[in-house]
Length: 361
Image (cartoon, rainbow, N blue to C red; front, side, top):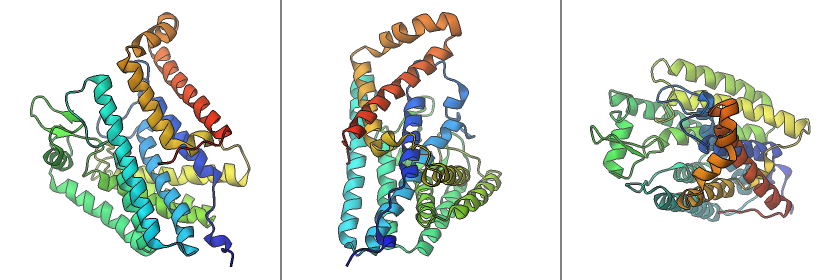
């Protein structure tokens, strides 16, 4: 007996496009030619606040949640073994975390860092993928909504119990430092305290973003675009209201930040779905989207090789800064280098896509 249409996994070009645009944006903001000369919108907020750059990582985790629903729920509905799907989720999550750990090992080689960092972007993605994947397989939609509410309220209460939201002294940073020791992203030389923007505790907030993406993925799967628009407005309003108590903060991934960025993500997903899936516009960014992890990890390996080989500085100086700075100032060549970096990887993923080569982990 053939599977019903509802039980057949659907491939939404809009999701691939949005994932790809997000990865390209990650590469753009992560690779300026000169960190001392970066336009403000391409920088994270120093602490509290939310810049355009602060929307990128939550957008990616939101899309992870959307993709989990689109990939796993139809397979459950058509009768695939729950145990086998659970094993697949956990194995893939382990590989993503392992790749992140390997990247940080290479970073030690390139930058001669004092300590090895345990947590990071891929590690957070892997942990959120594992937890959200298990929820998709073993929890009903109502339970998923309850988990989302519990994450927001519980994590918000945990942060409030710490008595401060300031760097190094907030409760999330203190717990992370107790768990990870010197293997955090940043140590305060004056106090010896540590902080990690992708730490263990703040992953609770990141998981909430992923679960919200799962629920949005269900609306997308059912073609309920109005629900995405309405939910986006409601969630953004809740986030704005919550920010009066706990401000937007990517480093802590506060509940207000989850809701604000999640609402924006709902609107962006609805808009891209309307433009690409319904109106038939080209799925710009698709090539990045179908090789997302490969592009992110490959670009990081390339950067580390350039740094370790001593080639990055002369490449930027001769290829960009030397002739651009006298004409347009130091910010233009820094941005031009970042755009060129993205362009190189756009060519790579386009070639891979043309040859139907897709790296999965």
